[in-house]
Amino acid sequence: MFKKITSNRPPDTTVWAAFYKEFGKYIDGSITGTKRFLETRPRTVFIVMVLSILVSIGCFLFLPKEKSKKDSPNLFVQQPLMDGMGGIVTTVSTLKELLEIRTVLDGLIEKDSLDSSDSLLMENAIDRIQILEKRLSEANKPHNSP
Image 1 (cartoon, one colour):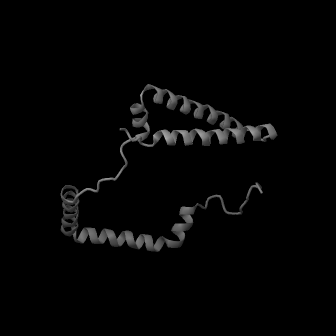
Image 2: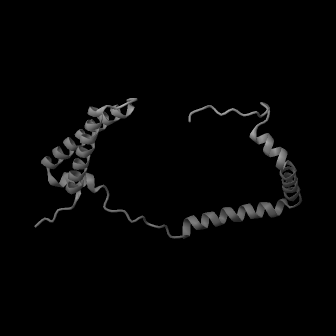
Image 3: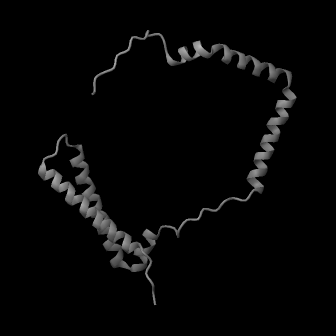
């Protein structure tokens, strides 16, 4: 499956050389035609360039910009602040636990092979992450204040 693939191509042949060998006459013809057009009509090319710059500036200044419809900015950060110090401490401790679980999972992923205890630890860690994420999403919901 991981066998190295060998090819019998000449070492001096590159993709660009093969591409140019196949389509070189078209590339050279288009370069020559473009140079001839630019040399025979410089005033037209200049006018088209200036007009495209003016159109671009006009679009920037006069067309209305779309306003992105985002939810209120960072409810995740605002909600714990509204809940008070207890909410902040709970959120920070939950995030800290999520980071610790992630480091454990990263260590398990880097192993070449896993035994049954590693698999069990990984399942428990993933379950715990789901519980913590659910807790964070519930804390993130807006509360109705009297």
